[in-house]
Length: 320
Image (tube, rainbow, N blue to C red; front, side, top):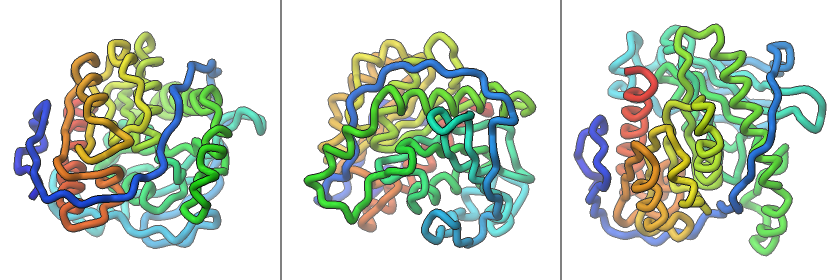
């Protein structure tokens, strides 16, 4: 069963002991990216493509999206009920930057009535920013008042579950680390310089899953001097460079399972020790992807607890 400790007090290690369930490894990996320069983006460089409400809608370039799983408990801190909270998120496809080579497609989820003025940069796994599991999770964050930007890290070419695995490494080699880092920095710069400029809060957080979790570590290491990010949550980051831990200034919550071959617990522990203000939540018996792609009842329980931990972490570092 999932640990019952309060999410608001994340311990360095969580002794969670559900029965082990073997899972097939997801395909998330990339060598550490290097820093790439970015330029200030004027508001006019952001091109909205389509705006829609958070109810079930067929998007022109993605599968039909499922509604966010917002429970009454999750929205208890807001002034709206469950159904209304889910209605208070609107989504917009945007293009950030100018020119085909420098522009980045992204999906912006904005909280409406309960908007707390903060932003979260959401870095996806290899299945990309249009994947339903990614958007479902981003919705849930936005339902709690956050503005969430989900960039297309793969320039329209995410990994697809239908592709044969023998082509994965060739696909991965096409995702140039410098280009990915530059796109992330472009989105971060727009959020800081333009989107947050008119917001009551200037705080920015970052959440990353799998592939995006590895990029989160690199992004926060690059951000050490600028200190744009106030918090991070890394879910089972793949190929994380533990040597970057000492360069990370923002507090990071690391979430992983002890059965995850793509996110070794030893790497998570090393980052927890070296990164200032970091905490690790290690779930016994959980494999890769359990928090946003649960495959069992045990996964479901721990996924809900991990979401609550993330929510408390973001609240404590972005709102409190």
